[in-house]
Amino acid sequence: MLPAQRSPLGAFVVALACETDFHGWRDAARRLAVAGIEPAHVHWQVADHKQESMFGDLQELSHAPPDARLTVPREFVERAEIAICHTDPNRFALLYRVLWRLRQEPNLLKIASDPDIRRMEALEKAVDRDIHKMRAFVRFRRIEEDGIERYLAWFEPEHFIVGRNAPFFARRFTGMLWSILTPKGSVSWDGEELSFGPPASKHDVPSEDAAESLWLTYYRSIFNPARLMVDAMQKEMPKKYWRNLPEASVIPDLIAGADKAATDMIARTPTTPSAHHAKVQAKHWPMRKDDAAVDDLPEDATLNEVREAAMGCRRCPLWRNATQTVFGEGPEAASVVFVGEQPGDQEDLAGQPFVGPAGKVFDAILDDAEIDRRKTYVTNAVKHFKFEPRGKRRIHSKPNAGEVQACRWWLDKELALIRPNLAVALGATAAQSLLGKAVPVTKMRGEVIERDDGLRVFITIHPSFILRIQDAADKEAERGRFLRDMQAVKKLMGR
Ligand code: URA
Ligand code: SF4
Image 1 (cartoon, rainbow, N blue to C red):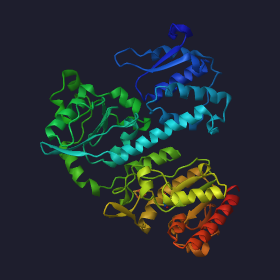
Image 2: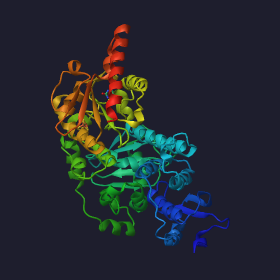
Image 3: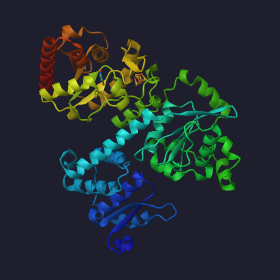
Image 4: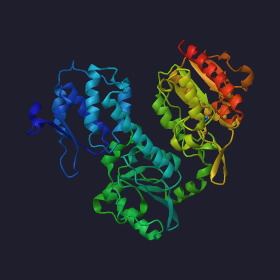
């Protein structure tokens, strides 16, 4: 039965529905692996939309013996989902090769020197960077039409990240009607639902200062209801958002121009609030308390789900001016969790904790203490950057007790999921968050305090304290003290 989908050259051809069809890839990869089809015999491609998908042929592969079960580490699945957004045409084959090898080499993912793993990591990193770049650099242009404000942006991502990034923009700009047009697919938010449109063309995009009418015409050509990509939408969106998927866009002013099929389709979709409602919502948006992302979180949410939910957090006002939530980073199996104060300027832009100047000091000292940062979990008491603008610069401003308290909700979730042997409070804010009260850090540094829930908390200073010392000898002495603290941490974290 297998040869049915073999090409004349003897290879299995898998046609995925779209560039980021992770579900399609995963399904095909499972079937192929269970049936014992070697990576060298599989050819992966993205289906031409007009062409019938060949993927159906793979159904037959599911008749493989039931004992040929395939267990795939969750870490691989999560990482593959990111890597697949890369534009490298060989990514599907690479991921299948890794999946294939994992069966014989269960520790493969940990072998950083392996060429396949190195490549996969490079893909993930590039995608991650692109995602953060889009978050930091999308600039909306305000367009007014019949009294309705609409925000349009043109962005050129390097990778296929529009689908993965869409929920972030929906949470961040909930009260606005916006669309982001890109050469790798477009996305639109109508205040309620996301819809995906085809790629926008660079040649047709109006110039920055072109008249609003040109922008509107262009936007309409992309988000023409008949062109919306419901299929691609489902494929691109993380599963948990599927329940929000529209059958079609309900952007009211487009209905008039839609053809019969599109109009019928639209008529069947649930009604959405009126444009007026959206307008009012937009006006009050900055004051709207919207904990949806938080309330949505199931009891048994995974660390990644918690992280994803935190991206839309509005438990305190700090999300408004910051670029993004900077959540903790590191393996879920970490035996130690380092807690800083809050992201700084560079962390805010990068979306990662401790990557700026304080992070460099921290990294160097961990290195000296022979602690591998990649095996630890690094996070902050407060997940959004709080700052005062001073000219073009953003000056760090200390989070207040209310903000620390609000954000503790996330830290508690991280700790509950990771269950480390030790938490390290880097500075007073972290200590306050971890212990629920203010503690004199310089006096208590090096001490371990056991919380009611059994978690041991190691108290020390914040690495930025070392940065701020001017006198070279004092600085060196302080660095030495911090190194000794980290050496103590190393001893404690193993237990
Ligand atoms: N300082 C912190 O407390 N956290 C960071 O992530 C960076 C600097
Ligand atoms: Fe939420 Fe924390 Fe950001 Fe406040 S600082 S909005 S609590 S993530």
